Image (cartoon, rainbow, N blue to C red; front, top):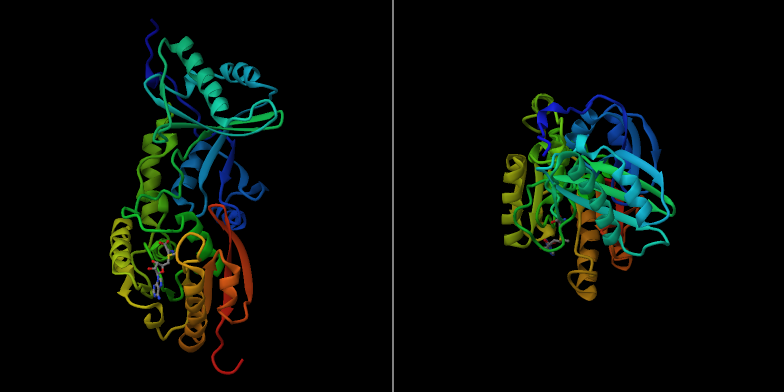
Length: 393
Ligand SMILES: C[S@@+](CC[C@H](N)C(=O)[O-])C[C@H]1O[C@@H](n2cnc3c(N)ncnc32)[C@H](O)[C@@H]1O
């Protein structure tokens, strides 16, 4: 049997590749801004992804630094394909043995929109078979495979008669930051929370108040943004670390360099409150895990009693919206009180309500200055902006 020496093969980490960064619907423009601020030129943008020309070394940086991206994918193959047999034949011709060691574990994720098969599980199996058959033929043994996304992850997009195969350099989604240890009902995805904050223009130079904080996602993401802390530093595992030739020295140096750029304190405390004591306890623990608990002042109280700082800033609320939690009638009164709270207690602030229920949103009773569309899972939502002028305007 062929003896395989893992260290013999190295991948070129600095060669320009096509990187595709995915995001939730509604977030692409904020992701584009982030990517451009990191110095990359965006080649194309759709609802849920942007493409750039960059290296696997850049993919390391993007995985560590992006707040709003979900996966960083590196394009490996692109080909025309009519049916599953053609998929197999194309994929088996790729030198997988130079990327994936037989001792690794492999997971395949497929998105399929083609007439020849109606089932993405079958496409994933065909792709996985081609990869492991190739490695087995070249190396004498094959990687294990299954649904666990903690090791090598390969993504397949099959649209009509075209297929794209990607190395998923993130592995698990980047929204999985690793700080939410205590699950509560209806938390926001971390990447969506970060995009909402970008949409408000929050950058840490102004106070941020978050009544109805739930598990604390908005407050924690706000602290990460304000401190310029790279969310990827909160976790140690990424898909690209499982690829042969992964440059662990460059990875450690990059983590250190990025860590050194983060701030240690903020000009203002972030204020987060919730009426539910358990929610505030969970939010505090999550903030502690994220290393930002000292930046957030937590209170257990009705949203209406949330302390409002003198200095003007942003107040953002994600109330229940009746589709998954709470009940429409009870919530009508809550939304009306949010309008009163904004008007009576938050003069000079810009207020935001993030909700998936437009009928309830109307109960706020104030004029919106912007209404931005986002998707929370499959639910179409709005981030509604209200300017609370001081005085009579
Ligand atoms: C949709 S959840 C917020 C989820 C949060 N954005 C997160 O990511 O975890 C709404 C929160 O509002 C809180 N809440 C409901 N009525 C409230 C009230 N009158 N005052 C303060 N908080 C309230 C609930 O306890 C719940 O935690």
